[in-house]
Length: 207
Image (cartoon, rainbow, N blue to C red; front, side, top):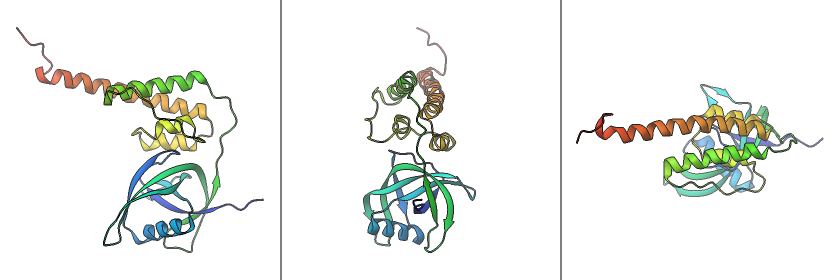
């Protein structure tokens, strides 16, 4: 039976999904040690959602993708990239930072629903058009499910992204994403309508 890999944990009040790239500001000694170990060993670590001391059972492996700046006082500004979901099995000791045995999580083998894929994609395109004026979608990423690719380019609530990270069925993730996009579209349309009405304070101007 293969060994369960041990990864360093980076607990944050956010959820990272595969294919997502986010900036991080590293200043605590424990996370500076984590950065050094991962770079020297060319190894991943795990970003896991933490809220009020409670750590989620599933996180996302990540790699330090780009060093933006190394500050004089030792602080680091970096870009990290999400790789794959893992389940935290057991925490271990031995470093300044927390480590844990982590079990890789593979999707269950189900046929992907093309209709659901198209629905999520069209809603993403509509939201992009409303908010940026460009109805474009991101490029696909080898080995990364389409639901994650879309979610990686959206500012979704942590509980939605966490539910997607924990789901082992692409259809479930696409459903979660489509429902979230419906809410985002409705909010964007309300904001646009409010902006259009603001100059007249909601009243029809007289000639």
